[in-house]
Length: 369
Image (cartoon, rainbow, N blue to C red; front, side, top):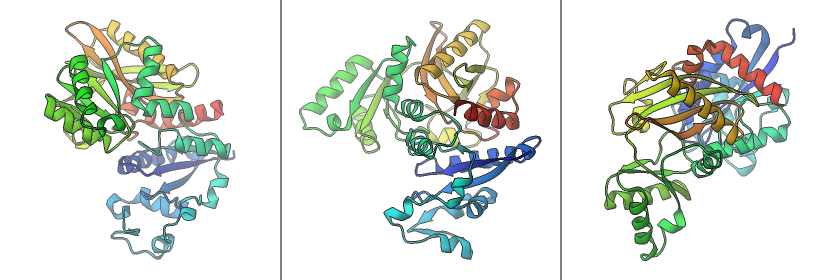
């Protein structure tokens, strides 16, 4: 049987570069285990932080390395790595060098872009892969872009009738406007949302640039900070609630997983809490009634379809126990994919182990193509 050549695309130009490498390492392991060994041939392709694509040999070194920091770039040089192969790959950074895709890409049968954040799950890389006319895992241009932009996402959720917290969309131009406009903007936010509220860049992942604010001075500082990350900003009302998550798998007829819960001791689920071992706990299944679990599963599928997602997604919710309300928070079309990440754990608890999940996602990519 001829093996399918899987182009595992990872790294990328975002703050979640290292998270992407960890996800890719787990997927690469799954592709070389069990029945997947006979089905797939791994062709890793690493995208550096400066945007340059690397060929399979060097990309495999990144996957194999236990010291990921040795592959970060400083002044266009790899730190702590002196092999001739690596040094020869570091040509002077030019626009043409950033656009050069390794020749091996022409041999790929299906792409698995495990890229998180901007330039990875926002529709940009998906557009490039569409131009290549090769199947790829995950959502297309529209689903990825809507899943990345929190304002567009929430607009789609509202259109689908999904309940969510109150929010206001803000632009950088409003924040960095003349001294007369900015105070009025803050006044309107205070009246509409009250305190505490959350200020978020609309197009960043992993809680980057997010702040919980409790007063006017904090609101002004948080808006200014968020504006340095993105030209679109969203401000959401705070809510006392449990944070529940549901995984979705499929294309036009998606299925939802069991429901999980995230618990933590910090003020909110910020970047440090999310990626520091021991700071957060994942509870699967979540201790909620069957009625609430079923409601979340149905809402997760509705959200998946509302943004035209495909393949996989993790949908996050707020469960307000005092009132019994379930509010949708957001959808993530390329969630963390290590063996200990919430998405694969939810599917494992639903009867689909990690290696089988990777196989299913590749088959879904072929089906959609």
